[in-house]
Image 1 (tube, rainbow, N blue to C red):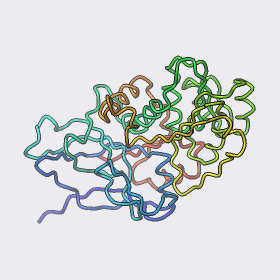
Image 2: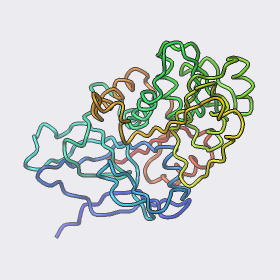
Image 3: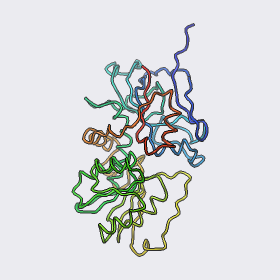
Image 4: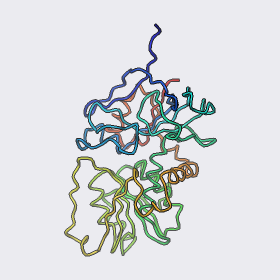
Amino acid sequence: MGSIAQRQALYFTAPGRVEVRSEPRPHPAGDELLVQTLYSAISPGTERLIYRGEFPAGLPADETIAALSGDLAYPLKYGYAAVGQVIAAGRLVDPAWLGRLVFAFNPHESHFVARPDTVQPLPAGADPPTAAMLPNMETAVSLAMDGQPVIGERVAVVGQGVVGLLLTSLLAQMPLADLVSFDIYPRRRALALASGAAACWPPDEAVTALWDRWPTGADLVYEVSGSPAGLDLAIQLAGFAGRVIIGSWYGRKRANLDLGGTFHRRHQQLISSQVSQLAPRWRGRWTHARRLELAWTMLARTRPGALITHRLPLAQAATAYHLLDEAPDEALQIVLQYET
């Protein structure tokens, strides 16, 4: 008998540890495609929590993504941003799929099977590594929708990681009165200005800088720093009846908020936003497919490939996550590359 074809898959095995394991390559069923991965993007905020072991025990990995069935528990195959090429198809699948480049919400692995209705063909001319950033752009689109910025509003974004920068680039296209942002790292602050923020300050200057600029505070503040301290800061930046959109997932980190000062008297709103579900207000006319189509459009319009700071082979995944954990000032968007 011939040797069994193998695939390479990334597993989180313990806090601070990842392994690339060989396992049998799957075969497509009659209604499935076999995709060979070319690139997969690491989601910096979520996957840093997974890497550090800061996720809540027993929480489902993602109830809306079939490839992420089961709970968050080690050993864990994770990730949801893969771009690859269809190399085989089941007998019930249109052969026109063969050879197509597709995006899928799939973990970091060299090969996977998926039904045609669960993958997204890449638009003509799309750059495959940048296309792997689609989930982060969809998150930014979802945040923009849930915040409902109004013409002439003053808007602030706390945190300029990948999602924060994508969000800033979207907000910069809207007719706001002013748009500012905040981040601890100089490189990210420079990228924020390039993405359309009128100003970007470090957090320790935030309150003074914003209230000097806007004496009535921010109308709308987005918290996408991934840090509970960022939420406390966002509350301080919001003015009377200000809206704070919380896009961060803190995992097991507790948020120690100062709600005894001006928060109560300012009638502020704290609003949770998460991309897996559409907020109820949008479900009358919006679907996940419509929002995803908009995310593709925004990827093409903003061309965020400059946010990719590292492209590393899957075999160097341990280095990728070490950079993500220890050098966030250097590592922004990391993309894993696969041998073909």
